[in-house]
Image 1 (cartoon, chains in turn green, orange):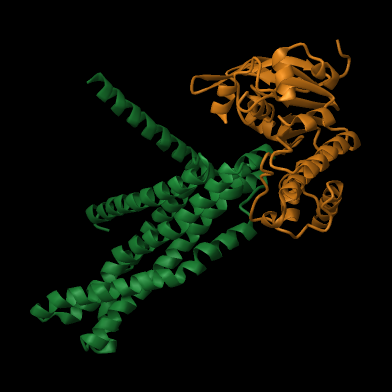
Image 2 (cartoon, helix red, strand yellow; image 1 turned 180 degrees about the horizontal axis):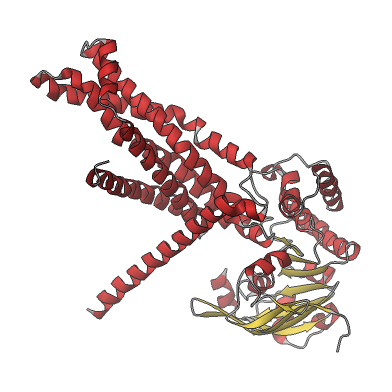
Length: 265
Length: 260
């Protein structure tokens, strides 16, 4: 019995240690992004733009397709129900609100967690096992400032942009079904889609995107920096990074939605 | 008593990892300008000593003094400044994969100085020339051979004109010729740039080729410190077995194998 409680205690301690390490990493990253300039070491433009292109521009196609097809599916599923009540036209507003408030930010974040979170962990993790992180530290170069800060800032800037593209692609998917399958007039569809869409629907989605960007990049970086044990360790960290990001994205989505819901925002 | 100034002094160093004692009461003095080799079997704690000297890890107890300043109690900001006076050549060279040779060597200069790009380019060319890699500036680390990567890593280690250069297994994974080239470089750089060099290795050919003094480490303890001649004629059976690479002797071969 005592062993059982000891094991629970040890697990809780492990989790608290990981949480502590994660918060320290997050704190250091924010410090260097915000105050690096006062140490004469701001986030450098070249690696920042390079990361923004890699994380943002090169993710546009995959984000477009995922949200576009989700928009199509959402329109078809809702049309199936709304047709019975003669409210097919409301497919337009349902799709646009569901995409902007919920599916656009979440799906874009999940795609980026798979594409970018995994890449950050694999890159930083292999640098860790190949002594490159230690080499930076030995040269007196802070790896969090040099490596992690540009990645976190780049994703923080790019994920909201990708979310907007995802929102538009999802709404376009709904439009395709509405106009070509449900035979709704194109102008009427667009008007209805935007009629019920309020600015808060957009900014709550974009706020979620900012939180998700921090989750993906910091979890990826933390797992990379915690990597031990060669190539197997890199693989293990990458898996943990993607799975943890997925779970945290869903949990924080629920929390943020709850906050907006109960505060009537 | 040697009258030469001491660069690094380690006093009564103890270190354990997960309850396993790695270093037990290690004391060493490294003089300015000498090539000091720490030799010993795999897992005997050589690299751990090196990491204490570079400030990468803190001891359980004991002190590491650099020019009289204790690195174990120093503030992180001060340690960052001291690290600029160190250079380190890693076992795997540890060049950043995504940067060219030139960018790797210029990295500490770009990060720590406000030198003009043209001057940095000149310094980089000079350092690459010193290690025989002129003309390889634009190449990526992945397209270099093991020996060339080691030399590029060495050029980066000396980019900031350090006082001390640490070498972790400089000959690991190299063929005998490449190994001799790296050894020659260590000796040349040490003399030309008046560096203090601390080399960790278990390659006996290298040890006797480059060392001014040698420390033999066994099971986390210093067995003997002396010149290559002292070590060659040591009466300690462990030292003799190690330098001759014999199977029979007091060294617990199973323990060595287990570490490997």
